[in-house]
Length: 224
Image (cartoon, rainbow, N blue to C red; front, side):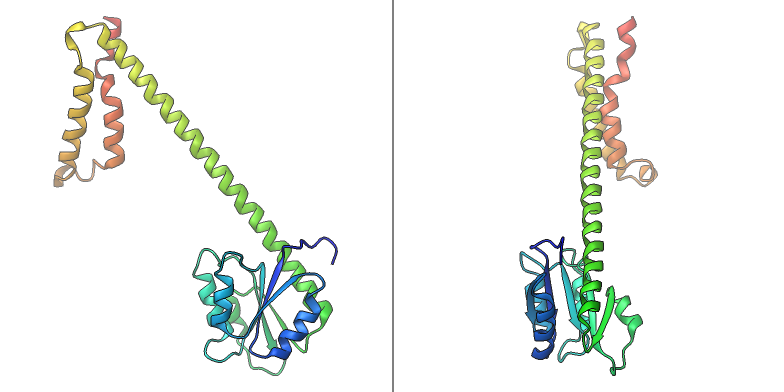
Protein backbone atom coordinates (compact mmCIF):
# COMPACT_ATOMS: atom_id res chain seq x y z
CA UNK A 1 0.00 0.00 0.00
CA UNK A 2 1.76 3.21 -1.15
CA UNK A 3 2.68 5.69 1.54
CA UNK A 4 2.71 3.27 4.46
CA UNK A 5 5.70 3.60 6.76
CA UNK A 6 7.76 0.41 7.13
CA UNK A 7 7.68 1.00 10.88
CA UNK A 8 3.92 0.50 11.10
CA UNK A 9 3.16 -2.68 12.99
CA UNK A 10 -0.15 -4.50 13.32
CA UNK A 11 -0.73 -6.90 16.23
CA UNK A 12 -3.28 -9.65 15.60
CA UNK A 13 -4.79 -11.09 18.78
CA UNK A 14 -6.83 -14.25 18.20
CA UNK A 15 -6.93 -17.68 19.84
CA UNK A 16 -7.58 -19.27 16.43
CA UNK A 17 -4.33 -19.75 14.45
CA UNK A 18 -6.29 -19.90 11.18
CA UNK A 19 -7.65 -16.39 11.69
CA UNK A 20 -4.14 -15.14 12.46
CA UNK A 21 -2.88 -16.78 9.27
CA UNK A 22 -5.61 -15.27 7.05
CA UNK A 23 -5.20 -11.77 8.49
CA UNK A 24 -1.43 -12.09 8.28
CA UNK A 25 -1.68 -12.98 4.59
CA UNK A 26 -3.78 -9.87 3.99
CA UNK A 27 -1.43 -7.56 5.89
CA UNK A 28 2.09 -8.92 5.40
CA UNK A 29 2.76 -7.05 2.14
CA UNK A 30 2.06 -3.61 3.63
CA UNK A 31 2.75 -3.91 7.36
CA UNK A 32 4.93 -5.56 9.94
CA UNK A 33 2.75 -8.22 11.53
CA UNK A 34 2.90 -9.61 15.06
CA UNK A 35 0.55 -12.17 16.58
CA UNK A 36 -0.69 -13.32 19.98
CA UNK A 37 -3.06 -16.19 20.78
CA UNK A 38 -4.22 -14.91 24.18
CA UNK A 39 -4.90 -11.68 26.01
CA UNK A 40 -1.96 -12.12 28.39
CA UNK A 41 0.43 -12.76 25.51
CA UNK A 42 -0.90 -9.68 23.73
CA UNK A 43 -0.35 -7.47 26.79
CA UNK A 44 3.22 -8.75 27.06
CA UNK A 45 3.89 -7.68 23.46
CA UNK A 46 2.09 -4.32 23.71
CA UNK A 47 3.76 -3.25 26.94
CA UNK A 48 7.29 -3.85 25.65
CA UNK A 49 9.55 -1.08 24.32
CA UNK A 50 8.11 -1.13 20.78
CA UNK A 51 4.31 -1.32 20.95
CA UNK A 52 2.26 -1.88 17.77
CA UNK A 53 0.64 0.97 15.86
CA UNK A 54 -2.74 -0.80 15.69
CA UNK A 55 -4.34 -3.92 17.18
CA UNK A 56 -6.81 -6.34 15.59
CA UNK A 57 -8.50 -7.88 18.62
CA UNK A 58 -10.68 -10.98 18.63
CA UNK A 59 -13.61 -10.49 20.97
CA UNK A 60 -14.33 -14.07 22.05
CA UNK A 61 -11.25 -15.63 23.66
CA UNK A 62 -10.79 -17.94 26.66
CA UNK A 63 -9.56 -16.62 30.03
CA UNK A 64 -9.60 -12.97 28.96
CA UNK A 65 -11.89 -11.67 26.21
CA UNK A 66 -11.00 -8.84 23.84
CA UNK A 67 -13.05 -6.29 25.77
CA UNK A 68 -11.06 -6.93 28.96
CA UNK A 69 -7.74 -6.75 27.11
CA UNK A 70 -8.77 -3.43 25.58
CA UNK A 71 -9.88 -2.07 28.96
CA UNK A 72 -6.46 -2.91 30.42
CA UNK A 73 -4.71 -1.25 27.48
CA UNK A 74 -6.64 1.96 27.98
CA UNK A 75 -5.72 2.03 31.67
CA UNK A 76 -2.04 2.67 30.89
CA UNK A 77 -0.66 5.86 29.41
CA UNK A 78 1.83 3.96 27.25
CA UNK A 79 -0.91 2.05 25.39
CA UNK A 80 -4.11 4.03 25.82
CA UNK A 81 -3.90 5.74 22.43
CA UNK A 82 -3.22 2.64 20.31
CA UNK A 83 -6.29 2.06 18.10
CA UNK A 84 -8.06 -1.26 18.68
CA UNK A 85 -10.27 -2.78 15.98
CA UNK A 86 -12.40 -5.66 17.25
CA UNK A 87 -12.76 -8.80 15.16
CA UNK A 88 -15.95 -10.84 15.38
CA UNK A 89 -17.87 -13.49 13.44
CA UNK A 90 -21.13 -12.52 11.74
CA UNK A 91 -23.07 -15.11 13.74
CA UNK A 92 -21.72 -14.03 17.14
CA UNK A 93 -23.98 -12.15 19.52
CA UNK A 94 -22.04 -8.96 20.23
CA UNK A 95 -22.52 -5.90 22.38
CA UNK A 96 -21.02 -3.28 20.05
CA UNK A 97 -21.71 -0.47 22.52
CA UNK A 98 -19.51 -2.22 25.09
CA UNK A 99 -16.69 -2.42 22.55
CA UNK A 100 -16.74 1.32 21.98
CA UNK A 101 -17.17 1.95 25.70
CA UNK A 102 -13.92 0.12 26.55
CA UNK A 103 -12.03 2.07 23.88
CA UNK A 104 -12.38 0.21 20.57
CA UNK A 105 -12.46 2.31 17.41
CA UNK A 106 -14.10 -0.07 14.92
CA UNK A 107 -15.23 -3.62 14.09
CA UNK A 108 -14.44 -5.99 11.24
CA UNK A 109 -16.27 -9.27 10.73
CA UNK A 110 -15.30 -12.79 9.75
CA UNK A 111 -15.03 -14.06 7.04
CA UNK A 112 -12.56 -11.32 6.20
CA UNK A 113 -12.87 -9.12 3.13
CA UNK A 114 -9.30 -8.03 2.34
CA UNK A 115 -10.30 -4.67 0.86
CA UNK A 116 -12.41 -3.84 3.94
CA UNK A 117 -9.70 -4.89 6.37
CA UNK A 118 -7.04 -2.83 4.61
CA UNK A 119 -9.27 0.23 4.20
CA UNK A 120 -10.24 0.36 7.86
CA UNK A 121 -6.70 -0.19 9.05
CA UNK A 122 -5.41 2.55 6.75
CA UNK A 123 -8.08 4.98 8.02
CA UNK A 124 -7.39 4.39 11.70
CA UNK A 125 -3.61 4.46 11.28
CA UNK A 126 -3.94 7.84 9.55
CA UNK A 127 -6.06 9.15 12.44
CA UNK A 128 -3.59 7.71 14.95
CA UNK A 129 -0.68 9.43 13.21
CA UNK A 130 -2.54 12.76 13.10
CA UNK A 131 -3.38 12.54 16.80
CA UNK A 132 0.22 11.68 17.62
CA UNK A 133 1.50 14.71 15.68
CA UNK A 134 -1.01 16.98 17.43
CA UNK A 135 -0.01 15.63 20.85
CA UNK A 136 3.66 16.25 20.07
CA UNK A 137 2.86 19.82 19.04
CA UNK A 138 0.88 20.39 22.23
CA UNK A 139 3.75 19.03 24.36
CA UNK A 140 6.29 21.18 22.51
CA UNK A 141 4.13 24.29 22.86
CA UNK A 142 3.53 23.62 26.55
CA UNK A 143 7.25 23.23 27.17
CA UNK A 144 7.96 26.43 25.23
CA UNK A 145 5.40 28.36 27.29
CA UNK A 146 6.85 26.94 30.50
CA UNK A 147 10.33 28.10 29.48
CA UNK A 148 8.98 31.56 28.63
CA UNK A 149 7.16 31.78 31.95
CA UNK A 150 10.30 30.74 33.83
CA UNK A 151 12.37 33.30 31.94
CA UNK A 152 9.83 36.00 32.83
CA UNK A 153 9.90 34.97 36.50
CA UNK A 154 13.69 35.04 36.50
CA UNK A 155 13.67 38.53 34.97
CA UNK A 156 11.18 39.77 37.58
CA UNK A 157 13.29 38.30 40.39
CA UNK A 158 16.45 39.98 39.09
CA UNK A 159 14.65 43.31 38.67
CA UNK A 160 13.25 43.23 42.20
CA UNK A 161 16.63 42.31 43.64
CA UNK A 162 18.33 45.09 41.68
CA UNK A 163 15.87 47.73 42.86
CA UNK A 164 16.01 46.52 46.46
CA UNK A 165 19.81 46.55 46.39
CA UNK A 166 19.73 50.10 45.03
CA UNK A 167 17.52 51.15 47.94
CA UNK A 168 19.91 49.55 50.41
CA UNK A 169 22.87 51.41 48.89
CA UNK A 170 21.06 54.70 49.63
CA UNK A 171 21.13 53.85 53.35
CA UNK A 172 24.46 52.44 54.50
CA UNK A 173 23.16 51.85 58.02
CA UNK A 174 20.82 49.07 56.93
CA UNK A 175 23.41 46.55 55.74
CA UNK A 176 21.75 43.15 55.21
CA UNK A 177 18.37 44.54 56.26
CA UNK A 178 16.64 43.57 53.02
CA UNK A 179 17.71 39.92 53.14
CA UNK A 180 16.87 39.62 56.82
CA UNK A 181 13.43 41.11 56.28
CA UNK A 182 12.80 38.76 53.37
CA UNK A 183 13.62 35.73 55.49
CA UNK A 184 11.59 36.99 58.45
CA UNK A 185 8.54 37.49 56.23
CA UNK A 186 8.79 33.95 54.87
CA UNK A 187 9.31 32.38 58.30
CA UNK A 188 6.39 34.33 59.76
CA UNK A 189 4.09 33.47 56.87
CA UNK A 190 4.93 29.76 57.09
CA UNK A 191 4.20 29.81 60.81
CA UNK A 192 0.88 31.59 60.31
CA UNK A 193 -0.13 29.23 57.49
CA UNK A 194 -0.74 26.54 60.11
CA UNK A 195 -3.02 28.78 62.13
CA UNK A 196 -6.75 28.35 61.51
CA UNK A 197 -7.28 32.12 61.16
CA UNK A 198 -4.84 32.39 58.22
CA UNK A 199 -5.27 29.01 56.52
CA UNK A 200 -7.57 30.42 53.85
CA UNK A 201 -5.18 33.30 53.09
CA UNK A 202 -1.77 31.63 53.08
CA UNK A 203 -0.52 28.79 50.91
CA UNK A 204 2.94 27.94 49.47
CA UNK A 205 2.31 29.97 46.30
CA UNK A 206 1.22 33.08 48.25
CA UNK A 207 4.16 32.75 50.64
CA UNK A 208 6.56 32.57 47.70
CA UNK A 209 5.11 35.81 46.32
CA UNK A 210 5.47 37.48 49.71
CA UNK A 211 9.06 36.27 49.92
CA UNK A 212 9.90 37.64 46.48
CA UNK A 213 8.19 41.00 47.00
CA UNK A 214 9.42 41.64 50.55
CA UNK A 215 12.69 43.32 49.38
CA UNK A 216 10.58 46.11 47.83
CA UNK A 217 9.34 47.42 51.17
CA UNK A 218 12.08 50.06 51.30
CA UNK A 219 12.05 50.98 47.62
CA UNK A 220 11.04 54.55 48.56
CA UNK A 221 14.58 55.16 49.76
CA UNK A 222 15.70 55.33 46.14
CA UNK A 223 14.01 58.74 45.90
CA UNK A 224 14.90 60.00 49.39
